[in-house]
Amino acid sequence: VVFVGRVEQEGFDGVPQRSSRPEPDAQSGSVRPALVRGSLVALRASLDEVDFGVVLLDADLHATFVNRAFRRLWRLAEDTTDCRPAFVDLMRHGQGASKGDVSSETFVDQVNATVARVHSGDSTPVEIRLPDGEVLRFQCFALPCGGRMLNYTRVTDMVRRSDELQVLRNAIDNVEQGIVLIDEALVVQFVNKKARE
Image 1: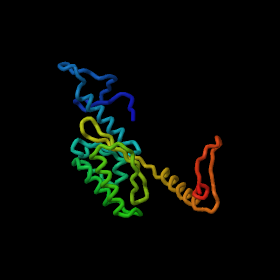
Image 2: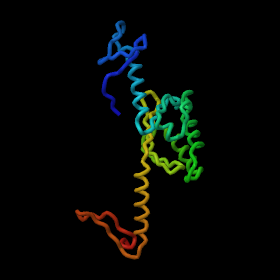
Image 3: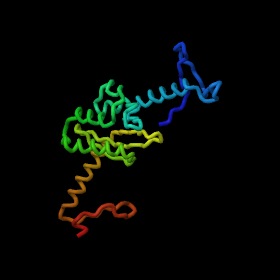
Image 4: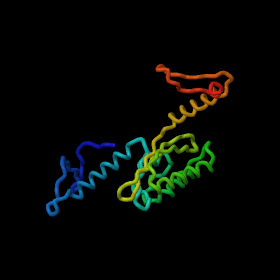
């Protein structure tokens, strides 16, 4: 996500002030803390508007920021994330709030695997199937400070299409006729079981 534009910061009187470039501190020559704070506020506000879930964890894997999309996905109340909960507690809360078609044992296994993946910093994308039928693509990014950035994107429609194609492939694999599918360049795309035999 790239954010371009001016950052509004509040002056001591509470009136927004515009700055087009960082103003150095008179004593140290570094960027003023107020400008950095204003940039972080703008970034957090922007992340609250995106439609994918974002969670920032500190080095102890406690949540320092949870955006609105994540709270909707896991049915978390606004104040759930105010006390910097541990990531495992967020997942357990989501587990308790999510009920549906996926067996609870399967979902518990997915939650445990996700927590282990976050601990290890594994950045391989994985799919999480929620009990209500939604499918999320989850990815964890290890940060230089020891924390983690977590990304949750809805991929339900893509996964459903893939599941439907798999059912079709399985059906074609079990018919009596040999079937070979080739593309316009005459490259073989699929060979069913009978044709292989």
